Length: 600
Image 1 (tube, rainbow, N blue to C red):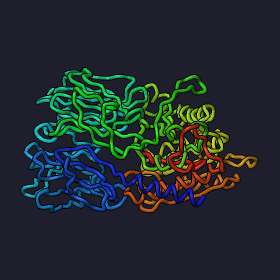
Image 2: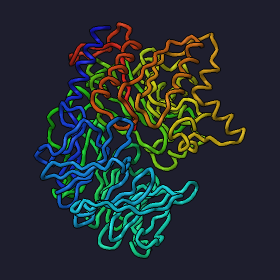
Image 3: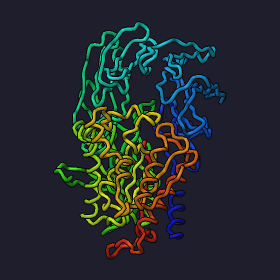
Image 4: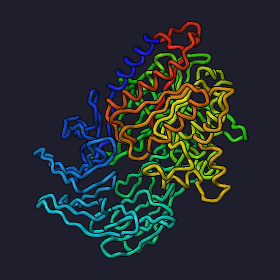
């Protein structure tokens, strides 16, 4: 086992070295270069360093003239950021420590002189004249969460109030333009219109009157990222579980790219519009991210040239199967190329908040694959892989459905002879960890062990978490007795506390994050204690310096290594996965292991 753990550590370190390039933005890119612990700002194309720091860069927005860059910086992984403005020519960094922000949209005026944003604690509109270095602050609605989506002359802001539609308003005039159930983003398009993303639909409205110019929607498609270039929209979306990139003009799809890398399923993780054209970041579980340039005459996937750093020894495949209620589910599996028969397998999911689980690169995956294991991601109801109905199918009072979908995915892997129950580890983070923990205790025979990272595990006490009040609808946490009873039946902590002593639960690794500002650790400790009372083998670990969102490479490495070693120890039985005649394993087979990833 020591040899296996050492091999995993070496492989993980090697794959982490690949780095993570960012899509260009006004001539710059927010990237993590090979060998660096954290992200920095670099010149797009040349890779010349512009700003490198051990701090976490939450957001970067360059000015149109490329002379200044607005940054949101956090000294810790708790995502508590403050504003800073970098002078590109001199390298001088001006910090605004009392202007708190956390991924809040920042807007430059077209003349590149004034930066605007709606800051937090207290919430107010902040304007900074970078030439004269003065700061002006103005009050905004005190009863709503506000986000600024366009600076002068339009001054467009979204106002969100609990239980009410979100309003798009003109801050300069107080004019209410339009309301939607939600507003994820808004972008000025052309000279006098704005494209509003509301859920999975786009609406182009007049920036003065709010009159609708055009709309686009597809109930089978989930939008994740929207960018505007002149009069066109470029949107990353998920359709039928696959990652696609759409070019939309006047409400009509002009171009439709599906992400593939050779024969493997892949994902678009970002898209940008810049002076060099349209760029996208494409990646796959065993293929590090790469920035590619798009044109209307070029497809994405098989047309891409061979890429340095691709893992030729792995393949990522798409599978469909039926859940216990007959619904067609999907699963993405990454395996050593040519591997036949059951192998140690890590199965993960997210399954909530309409978020799609896409086949993106994560260094623990190729490290695990090199050792002879498989890595699978289940698309379960409640996520964003298959449109609005799919999302609704695992939302609120129907959360149990997504939990049982994960059990169906585990059973299918065994039935398809890709895994064995005694060499299967389920892994989930955040909402995915909630699903994994509830699933394993509801179906304890499906796996040998499970890993939960930073997850709410007591669904009857969501308000105990820093952001728990925002999750009540997702889990159907109503106040009536029937709703509380249903919630108790799927709450991981309640399930753990009701375990009998006749059969021990699968092995458990519970991970809490030392600087988590979203999920409190108490649930995980209580859950582990309940498993211990029931005779379970329990390990608790606190990831030092790690948070729920922003993390440096050292923290991610330690977290990934702990999960991989747990998976190896849980699934190792001394029986190597079978290799077809005429092929040779690319490394010594690990014989029974898995991994976990970390969600957003």
